[in-house]
Length: 447
Figure 1 (cartoon, rainbow, N blue to C red):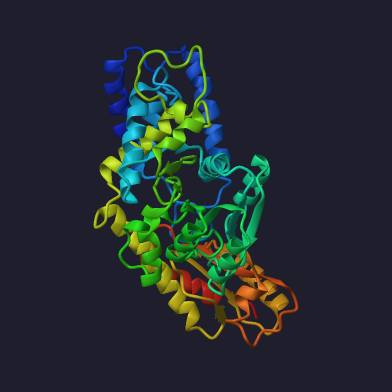
Figure 2: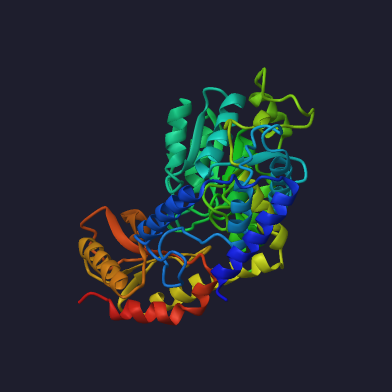
């Protein structure tokens, strides 16, 4: 019996069990309608074949990680009810599960007192954190590293809040000397620290950022959408580990369970250290909150309708694989980092490749050797295409000259941004397939 067979069998038993509690699920249709559905779904299956094999270990490109089977089953089971976690009236059981699951995430960062909820993803979660900062310090400027996710600049524009970027150092981290200089000029309300940049997986020096921000009376928001779960991993470098240890001292945190948390898209989470910020969400609704005096999640969320199925899937996953140090979930994440270190050591020791700094998390960046930046870009794109023909799927990233030049002293930088190869080794199975990955890389080096 295949994994898919087992998954469908478990789902079938669970749906029948649920129907015993809520008779009439799912809605019965006529025979002809079921035949039509069968035909449409067969067509859907064929259309979905036009995808990269994201689930396979030789897919080592973008930030795509298959949901755990327990998440898929729980999500589909919840869709039989289709709860809405805006109000307890529309998602009583799933709202309770969301509160429990979010509580586990808060404890992962060392918080027992907090305000938080799930969102459609990191963008919405970051928007809420920046919105609250703007409510607390209206008119002040928001700061983030130039390597921070582009969403912060866009969100600031949406919120009509001033935004500036801080230069990054040679490791892709926020430059604290530049941050201190900018803070000294005043008018800053929030500093965004990124723990796991999307380009290179760099981790901003949170201990120093918090010290500087507090000295100047600023809030600190931690965008750990990608890297947050690495708080559980025990094989990080000392300064990276120190950064994750200080998350508990931030004012707000974002983490995306739909990245390393084994969830379907979209599932983000925003957390606030001070539950008092809930006052900014207060609104009147004459018809929504009437069946319970308990907290309705819509009372602390900018989003209104939100899928209860996402909360159910996260709850089920964390029930099976608690996000705690030393657990199976943490061990699997540890292997992702081991895979990244193994790939980096290979390319760093190979005469055909240029590398930059070692990975802090599980993202590796490198490039084929050449004497000019433009040639490196060309060769990177060619290797990318050749590897895909052999079943190895990588990603490309354009990095600025100032980040690469300290590591590539012999290169003539005839362009300011250079196309490099990038891999997000997000699956534990990557650790068992490094030999296959590196063999294809060597076979595909452009002449």
